Image 1 (cartoon, one colour):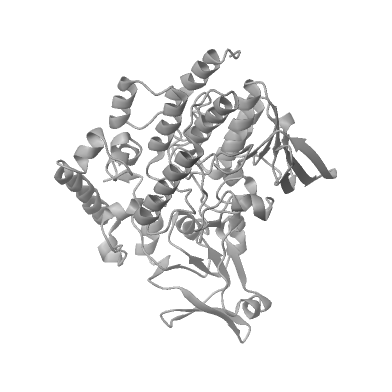
Image 2 (tube, helix red, strand yellow; image 1 turned 45 degrees about the horizontal axis):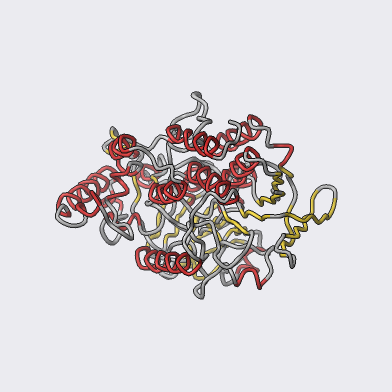
Length: 493
């Protein structure tokens, strides 16, 4: 078949590679000038790095270079994806600087894709359309009162992904909005040549040190199956049922110990940065890793944190620019950098198609996070924020390949909708509504991968599963999945 893929990040590249291996013709549309998706050079803000170590944040048959540090930087991940595209000869099929303007379905259920690239506007017909443009499609920047006057006086408001040159902050008063990883990364990344750095945080959340007590790598806590089991999944069975039943005391003691250790190690009480609620709330939406040097700079007075507050208004007076907080405090502000997340949008699809994708609450209604039950010849990959995004995208590509080959036994449309709606309701309750329209699966990354492997009939062995309860998941152990699927479908390796 002839297949259009939108997006050239982990999901887009792995989907293009594996579908090509299974005999399909693929064309990838990427609106920026390089591969990488969220790791594109166009989004590289100061201090950006992975949350995972390189041994867990990679593809199954393409490990990251040994020369990389344990937590690779954004530019290093982009270079890794560029190398992957070169290694598997994907670049001829990737059309950079090419934005999809519209994708509409023909009466015969094929897709008409209109795109604008370096050679102008063009339209093609495809048998299938796969959206791999990710859940971070458009920066979400708040609309601040007084922003126009603030900008007219020389002030700047931008998203963290748009702040790519720390030299622009030299000598400036910098306000960073938010307390997630990108906000803290930027607060440290602007460096010392600034007038001031202030983090304005509506809510202080729990963060995980890269190394607990300076010794134990956090991956042994959260990047194992035991780490996932510490948090209750939608359905509990086996050891998980024990940890949230008869063994709940053991589980609570484990989580409580991590909370106490984290509190002491980061000096949260002394800094006045104790989050509200227990440590287990760290998994309600997205787990945030401690930015190296952040708490040390707060303790040294180089970064100020205004907790439980928001920017109420931006203003300009006497040639200077300011931000007034909800607490009434007025701060000098030359640059306001917003680490306030992303909007999940698919503007190139018409309203009728979008109505078949979203539920009544605006969540993506996708079976297995990939298949919209009410839309034909349309698939998604990478629409799940995960600790193991590369591995998840790769297994998703194989799931799609098997689906196209008629090798998956899926439940009925009604069952798909019922299971998906059940999951969405559970996610909303578990995350207090912060689930990125049904796409954030942290901390249950491996549960989602297990579901796909079960559908494929290629579940991992008991020995491997037992090992992953004790040590971090190794994506390289999953290279056999593609080999087994190819052998079953008689595709040349």
